[in-house]
Length: 51
Image 1 (tube, helix red, strand yellow):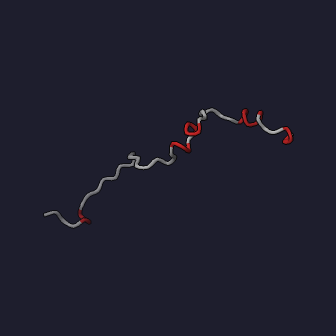
Image 2 (spheres, rainbow, N blue to C red):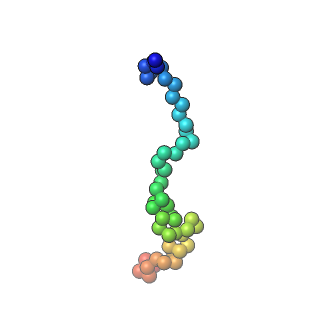
Image 3 (tube, rainbow, N blue to C red):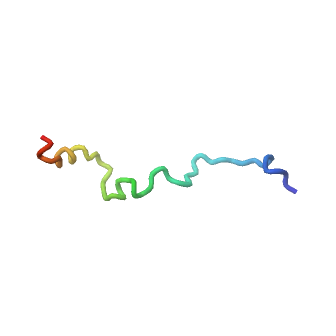
């Protein structure tokens, strides 16, 4: 007969990913973007009244 739950050995696996930190729709690919830096594109696309 097995002992109480306190006596059971439980191994934790740190590399096991149950839930991701970021979901697929939060990543750039989820929005159809690429991983490249978009700073230059944002500066080029700024409105004229921003100077």
